[in-house]
Each structure stands twice: as C-alpha cells, then as structure tokens.
Image (cartoon, rainbow, N blue to C red; front, side):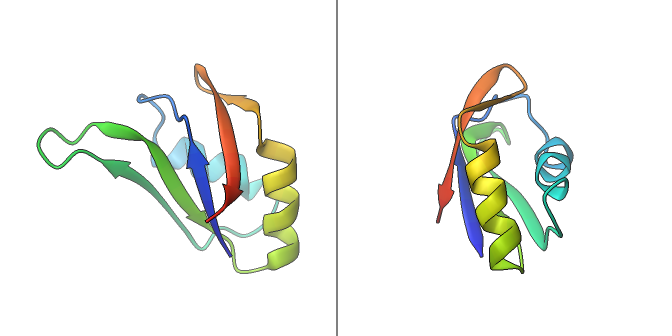
Length: 77
C-alpha cells in the first residue's frame, strides 16, 4: 500500500523516514521527492508497505506527529 507523507522537514533523510515507518511493519520502498535542479527535498515523499494492516496502523499513528522539525501529514496515496 502506497502512503503519501507531506510537510516533511527539508532536512529529513529517506533513512529517517523509513525508520519511522519500520516501527509499524515492513517497508518495501521509501522515496523523498527532490528538486531536479539542486537535489533538495520538495517537502513530501512516499512510503510503500506490502501489508495493508501495517500501512493502516502507520497512517493512523504517524499522522500529525513530529518528524524532524515539522509535523507531518500522512495519508494513503
């Protein structure tokens, strides 16, 4: 199941994002969308989790929580 994460701190790494979701289950992929011109984060990304139950718990638990310096918004993509 693909999950959209918005309002990411521009300093948040893919490893930090993956670690936050791995607490709730297996992470299949983790990508932060970046500017083509300079490689800086656009402030959002995607996490894919193979088990729907794990994804549901992750979305419910992590939505409106702090990751880095920002409160992230998490929902299904």
